Image (tube, rainbow, N blue to C red):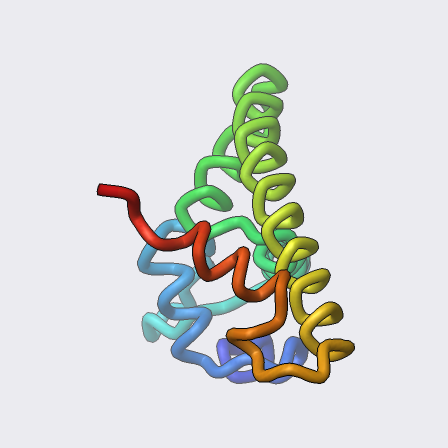
Length: 127
C-alpha cells in the first residue's frame, strides 16, 4: 500500500510516517519509481509505535526497543528504565489530581487554600 493509504488507515498525516522513517522506526520497501510501499509488517510496526507512544515512550526509546526485539536483556533493561520513569510521572499526576480536588473543595482563593499554599511554599527554593 502507499504512504497515503497507510497513513489513512491509522488517521495519521503522511509526514508523520516520513518522520518515523527518518528516525529509523519504519523501513518501507520502494517501488521501481522510488515510491514507498508498505505491507503487513509495516502495519504492525505502526500499531506498535502508536502503542509505545501511548505508553509514554519517545521515538528514540521506541527505536531502541524495536531494535532489541530479539535481545531479552536489552529489552528488559529499556522497559525497566521506562517503567521507573512512568511510575514517577504517575505519582506526580496523582499528586496534582489530589491538589486540584482539594482546591475545588476549598472556598478560598487558590493561593489561600491550605494544600495549595503548602505546595506553593514547597516549590520556593531555599537560600
